[in-house]
Length: 247
Image 1 (cartoon, rainbow, N blue to C red):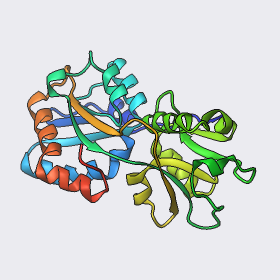
Image 2: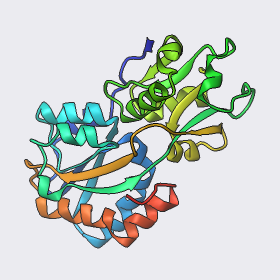
Image 3: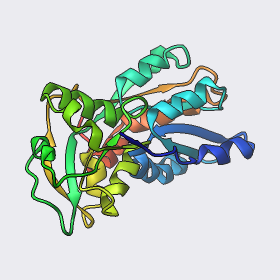
Image 4: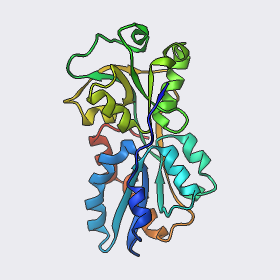
């Protein structure tokens, strides 16, 4: 496996810039970037005086930040496992699933090698394959589960370029630095001009996104209001527009 150093996230800015009293700090999985950013305006309009400050990264690093004392009001993960690990940090009564997704195999839009599914990656022409780091990135764990079920994981491991978020894995494919990559369908859709869908991948656990209020939140009422917004008709319409499935 080829490991790539973790990129600095927005949270570095949050830690060095004191949050205003009316800021709502939301840590969310990288795959939610576009959808949650589209919710920012409507939510703030409905709650004058409140500003959402987003921190997008892979769910594992977000959890580590919270464990180290980073100020967070709401946590949205791309998998149940990470939220389970955060059980002592979040209010379990507020935990709820709000979206689903699909795992897909993508190739660069131009000059791609013929590919119909994961088994084809065993071919010698496929040298590098982007995959989220299974140790910290949910899309990597879903990918590992699917490839293990298909009996392909061990054989393909030497070709893996480990990404620290699903967006980083997507970027590797976009730039043509790898011949293929495993990402969420919603992320692939954001770069439909740069990547092509080769196949939808099965054999993994259902992809579901939970969200919860963090126990140390100083804006619990507003944090719950954001969760309610995500679950409501307007928030669900935004998620559907970006290709997320119903929870």
